[in-house]
Image 1 (cartoon, chains in turn yellow, blue):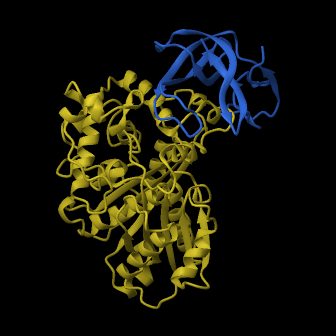
Image 2 (cartoon, rainbow over the protein chains, first blue to last red):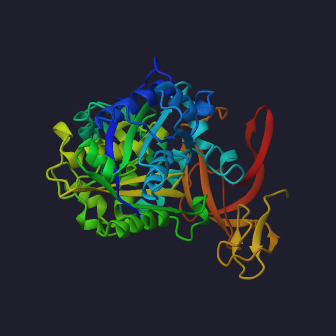
Length: 394
Length: 109
C-alpha cells in the first residue's frame, strides 16, 4: 500500500442548523477541506459521503451525487457510504483504500447528518432502526438503552461509579468550551450534575444508569477531509499528516449474543489492526478522539484500545490523565458529548480534529507536541468499529 | 404459549437468537428450533425514560434474560424493582404498536 495523506481538513460548527440542508452542510465542509489543501482547480477523482439516514431524516437519498453536482466536481465518482454511526469512518476507509491501491490520487471524503429536521422521539426511533428488527427494535430499545444495559454490567464489573462517568462528561464539556465547532458550550460542574440534591432536575435519567449528561446531544453538522497520495500532497505543499494505520472489525449485532457482553471485541481488534499497520503501540499515541456517544464508552473504549488496563480508565479520568494537559489527552475536541454527534459526520470530524492537533492548529485546545493521533468510530452498539492512526511527518 | 423461535446448533449445541445462517460458534448450518424456558435470570437491564416515537410512556424496563437452556434474549421486564440476577418468568405480550398493529414479544414477570 502506498502512503495516503490528509491534505485538507474542514468542518462547520455542529449545532441545530435549521437554515441549512444536509447538502448545504456537506458542501460547506467540503469547500473548507479543499481550500485547506489549496487544491484550486485540480480535479477531485472520487467522493465518498458518510451518512447514516438521510432517507429517513431528510427524505433525500443519493446525497453523494447531489454533493458532486453542487460543488461542480463532475464527473468525479461519487458514493454514499452507510455504516450506522461509523458511516464517517467507513467513508474515510473507502477513500484511504482507493488511494492506497493506486487507483486514485485525489479523493474528497465528507460526512454529515441533519438530525434536527425531525422531533426528538422521531430521531430516537430513526437511530434505533440500527438495532435488530425482531430481537431488539420491537421492544423500544434505543441506543441510550443499549448503552444503559452495557453500563450496568461494566460499572458493576469494574467498580465504576456515576462520579467517574461525571468526570468524563465534565472534562469533555470543558474541552468543548475551547472548541468553536462544538455544539454544547456549557461549563457543567459536579455539583450541578451529580452531588446537589436537586441535580436530577438538570441531569435526569435517560436510560438508567445513564443520565442526560452521559449522552451526546442530537446535532446537525458536517466535516470533510481531502485525501491525496504523497506525491500530490508534496505538490500542494501541505503539512504531511499521513493515515498511517487503519483497522475495522465487527461483532454480533445484539449485545446478548456476546459471551461476555462487557467485552468490546470489535474495538480491540480494530485498534490492534490500526496499531499493527502503523507499526506503533498504544503508548505511542499522543492524542486520541474516542467515540463517547455515552460517557461509559470513553472509559470502556480507552481500555479496549489498550491505553489503560481494564478497570483503570475511570481512575485515570478522575486523576486528570486524559485532560488536554494530561498524559494522554482524550477528546480534546469535546468529543461526541460536547462537539455533538451528527451521526455520519462523526468519524470524519474525529480525523479533522486529529489533523488540526498534529499540525498544531488546534488553538486553545492544542495538545502539546502531538505526533501520533488515534481515532475510534464505534458503529451500532460496538458491532462495527473503525480505528485510525494518524502520523505527522517528523 | 406463543413465544420466539430460537435455534440450537445440531453440531455443537450453541443456542442462538436471533437467527444466523451459520453457527456463531462452529459455522454449522443445521439447527434445531428451541424456545425460551419458563424461568430465566436477569443478565442486565435499563430503565428507559426517553422512548422512541410511538411508545407513549416513561420508565419502560428493558432487559436481557438468560434462560435455563443457555439461550439469551431481550424483552420487557414487568417488575418495579429489577435486580441483576433476579429470577423471572417468561411470558408473551404486546410490546409495541406500530402503525396501529400490535406487535408481540417476550415479557418477563
